[in-house]
Image (cartoon, rainbow, N blue to C red; front, top):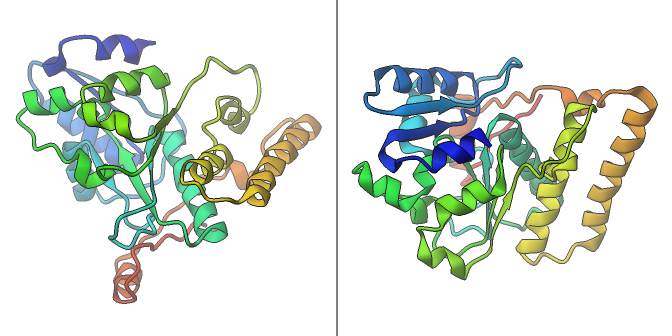
Length: 268
């Protein structure tokens, strides 16, 4: 609710940052402490955060507002079939894990994974008012379907995208908080609001018109198994609660590039 209220204030004053990793938090703080005549909000987790980006990469990412994540994408620099965007710490992790599932189970599906760190720059009007070059079409393509998995109310993202009149011609699905939740496990909170990895993967298959009913049924069965587990043990399985560690090492990334691939993720 607080984020939605901020987004209704004067465009040139507001920045809402949702850093995906520890170095992005530092870059956001640096940006906030050096800004003038602005109201900045940083939304991040209290839990330990890994570092997916170097500090220099995080600074570029924060300044851009949103960027393609090459080591999670499978489009190999070509036009993707669908764009998966994460905005927020937990929701970005779930997008990354959904991309991992689809890379394994639907390798023919070309994915582009994007991370959004400054949600206000999704708004064309705000981008223009700040004198920044709009790169929405470059990152999100001009006509491919998009799934945005984000930390707040879906209506807030739809509000920001309203200024982009041409976006009504393609499907843009915004997943977010649905006012669902109770005293339960962290992953169950994600599944209740349909922002978990399995829900994102199922929606990606549906929107991209990939006919894979058995695969979707398999993902749904995993959600049901999770429900059974938390009822029995009162906690999430370890494989769902572990913090993912992406390791796109420079040498590994170079070897992958030589093979013509743009994915170099190793999740411990």
